[in-house]
Image (tube, rainbow, N blue to C red; front, side):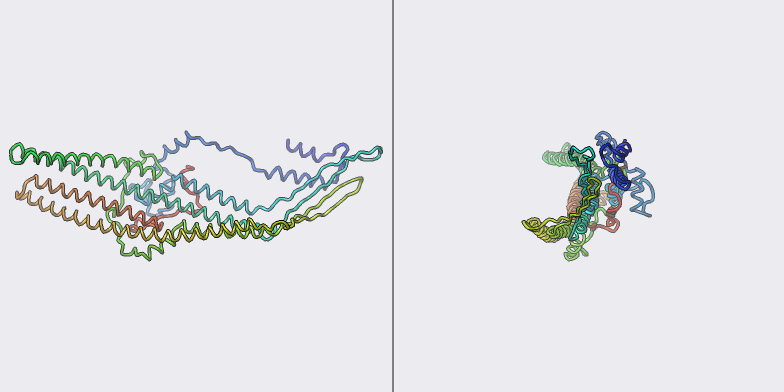
Amino acid sequence: MRDGCVASWLGPRPGFPAGSRFERRLLFLIVSVFLCACASYRAAPIEPARLEQKFEARTLSNPLLCEYLKTDLGSSFKSCPPREWDLSRLTLAALFYSPELAVASARLDVARSAIITAGQRPNPSLGFGPAYAGSDSPTFAPWAIGAAGLNIPIETAGRRQIRITRAERMADAAALSLGETAWMVRSRVRKAFFDYLLARRERGVARAQQQAASEVVKLVSQRVRQGEAPEPALTLALANQARATLKAAQAETRVPQALTRLAAAVGVPVGALKDVRFQWPGFEEPPAVSRLTPERIQRLALLNRLDLRRALVEYQAAEAALKLQVARQYPNINIGGGYGWEVGENLFELTPTVILPLLNQNQGPIAEAKARREEAGRRFAALQAQIIAQAAEALARYRGSLDVLAQANRSAALEGRRLEAVRIALEAGETDRLSFEITKLAALSARESALGALGQSQAALGLLEDAVQRPLGPEHLRTFTLPPMARRASPGDRA
């Protein structure tokens, strides 16, 4: 049908001049280019039920996930799926499935597409049409080709390159935002993973406390029945047993809750983590602060913080926006031309036009762009000061938590040695079972306090890592591969 339309345009019409072969070919070329260059629309409806099915089908044994892990882990990746999952592997799985990373990747695509838009040159325009003149003369041709105007806009003052530069800086900002999202995913996985492992250890201590408290109640009951202990001693033992039972019940509920949060952080259904073996070497040994000096932490923060680098790139984009507004005070040039045909005469005209900057010289947009650049500069300075303060505070908190952890570990070690001494005395017949169980409760209580201090220190370490956006743990936990901006982020969302 399009070919028929083109043919009808090219063919002679009654009352119209036939025109030359060159004119027909030119018109055919214009129409053909217009028809072939147009993009076609393709519908992409969202199917919530299908998305839900895809989410429920996610597993850690996905072959595409295995390839993703192998690409980043290299020779350290031996089997698929891995027999054990550590923080690095769980982080990569979370990056593979992360919906936030998919959104950030889409934003990066939008920003990169804007570079194409910024580099486009304005299209020329062409206008033509017939003219009719009435006359009583039988030899007079009433129809003629009217003014066929061609307008070619020419941009001045390097506006196109300035637009491209600004769009490139905005794309750089979107890429850094993608990196921020990746770090956020890693930070969330680290916290959820540690909380789950800590909840399992706390559950084990709570179960042991409940068992020891029940044993104390049993032994005290025997003594009360034999008249060797007063009745209030049994009441106290029962109260301790009730508290231990409550702690055990609370610890039991925290484990599946923590596993659910870990599954959400990784981006898989909770069923995908069942029967998975986890490992965190050095779980109870957070890094010492000997190398984490205030100067080093501040330098790491200023070098690694992606939001600070993004703020700098946004300032550069504001600088380019100001250059663009300054360039717009110089008018563009429009090269116009026309052609007409009348009574056998060919009429040509050339009419270049330019906007005269008489009433304004773009002062308003220039002033706004200057103000936005100033705002971007002050925002960068404020963010830099905030990062310095945040890093210093996080380091002080981590140091304090390590002191508390060291004291709690010393107390737990002393109680452990005392329990061992009582056990030896029990085997030698120098003490009784009740004294041993009471000492065990004290040792378990010290162990519970040490786990609480460990949780606080690891939480403080997580905040410190967030402040510098860099892993600070043992060597096996420091490897964090930021997804390359050129490689499509969150491939699991498209799997």
